[in-house]
Amino acid sequence: MINEKDTMDDSGLTIVYTGKGKGKTTAALGIALRASGYDKKICMIQFIKGSWHYGEMNSSKRLEPEFEMVAVGKGFVGIIDDKSPIEEHKKIAGEAIKISTSKIQSGNYDIIILDEVNYAINLGLVELEEVLNLIKSKPPTLDLVLTGNYAKDEIIELADLVTEMKEIKHPFQQGKKAKKGIDF
Image (tube, rainbow, N blue to C red; front, side, top):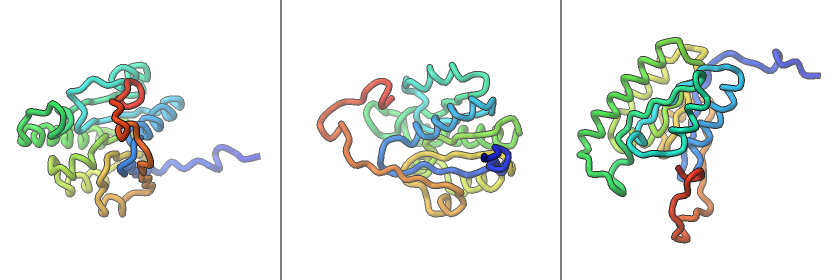
């Protein structure tokens, strides 16, 4: 019989969910759901989605006090109804970096999720170096999860686990709109 203690490792991981397929944030939320079942403390900092209403905003409250979600972004950049200047998105993303730094260094969390941070780098809202510094400065037992398409090679190199979501088929290709509970 396998002893649970023999299979456990307390060292923190850097995990990246990237790729053009759907499910990056959902995978990170899966970690949060699993970890909250063990009374782990989790914080998700959202770099882009902040101004839209989506299911995680409601469901995350059900995982409190173990799970904290901080929606910092101003909404998706340059698409649909975004009328904000890029400078405003950059300023808010800079705030997300400051919040992330504070939460990472606080010692209050077992897992921190930087949701859509890879998109934020790709869009030029935050500098790659800032995110690399977050990864390098994390406490040794903290698990750090980064989501979003376009993960940079330097981030992939530092990561312990990288999963690329690959789109095979998507309802949008058939003209279907986003669905509550599935897409947002």
